[in-house]
Length: 95
Length: 484
Image (cartoon, rainbow over all chains, first blue to last red; front, side, top):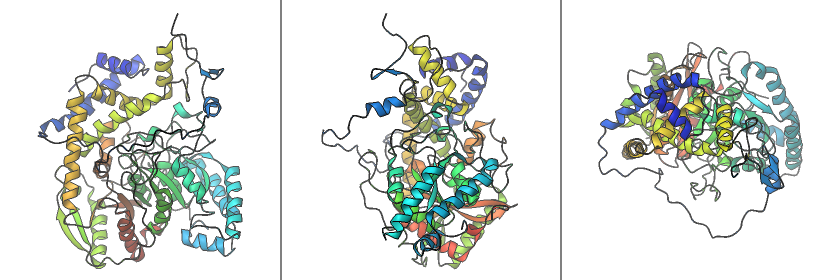
């Protein structure tokens, strides 16, 4: 299993992760090593085995559809990088 | 005061021998004195600690004190603390003051425990050596040229150096047990679902579990009891009453059946670490236990399974760090895409980026079945091995880590070698079982941890088994030179 630098660029793009061009080769090498190591899983016959999502096979609980939280917008927006009039600011997306 | 057990400290507080304020000052002074070198604490909350201590003193005087009232502790910087920076060891959250308390934070506050500050950790808990922290590596107090283990390295080093009697940690692949072993202290990761994950910054949600560090099992029992319990705000929390862990400690071990998995004693285990583990098992025989060899045939696959499941879940969890609502935001983004990409590129360190990319690739179109689904199937096989083993034995024992603490920088360039340092701990997270590490000896002056693995919700039994060993041995009382 070998990942080339183009694959690293593609994954980084999918993850919206800024990766410096100069680091692509290092990441390509270490990810290739890791996926080569993971390859041993292919040797295991898992026909008919149910994938395990929770150790105790617990199911998601449902709760009554009631309001339990109070409005804390000001508190949450106090830690935001840029807000104005109760709105989170991002660069313009619609011209 | 820093060599006293929790029950001695609580008795001293109640008898008026010293106040919580004095106790808190004592530990704050130790942090001030020793932590410049160790780097185990990233935020000291001295004023809030002294205020909480005075409040605890009022509660004690009013006769309204529990076992942790007035007792100082350090909190891993992964647990949200209202109004206090919660950095998770990352530049991304260097400016993040949590707007609310994690359930564990809230429970410890209500118990009257006094938070001294927040501990250093691997960035977003991704690491086995505490070298991936934005705030620099933590040093092991037994040898400051060596790592304390990770990811809860700051908590483990601080308790080992007696900078606090207790600390919290989290364990996704061994992050409580491995640093406990490398720092010569006691740590327990409970059953998945026992301690609430609400407000505990998520790394791999199906594996993450909080737990305590202390010098002894008796002390860890008190902190675990305070941290545990059903929480409707955590959708994977288990609705089941919490045992009185302290009451379970004194049961004798006559007739206990210990399983030794042959896979945990293979060539990868350092011979001198093995000798320490063998001696600990001998001690248990003298306490009335019998020993049985068992096999966990799929456990050898746990590291590759983990390095699919954990990065896949982390790549999804960490997508919330986008530079919009909280955390690091790049300067002058030219468009929304640039805002996301550069904020994340600047905010995350190399190991976190690596894991996000592993996970993104494993979950990408065409690969999901081959990696994530396959890993989740093998995960079930790994769990079923344990379920079968617990039909024959009461507890499983073995080494926590294949070696003692390694040197700073020794493994940081080779991720696969670093990942293999968690080879004995990861299977326990994949199965969701409780696991514990207790100090069992020294090799060349460095601590060795004995790992105890229990059946689901057998935390009380594990603490009991650990406590009985600590009653007849003194490894847990050993303190690194210079910190006595």
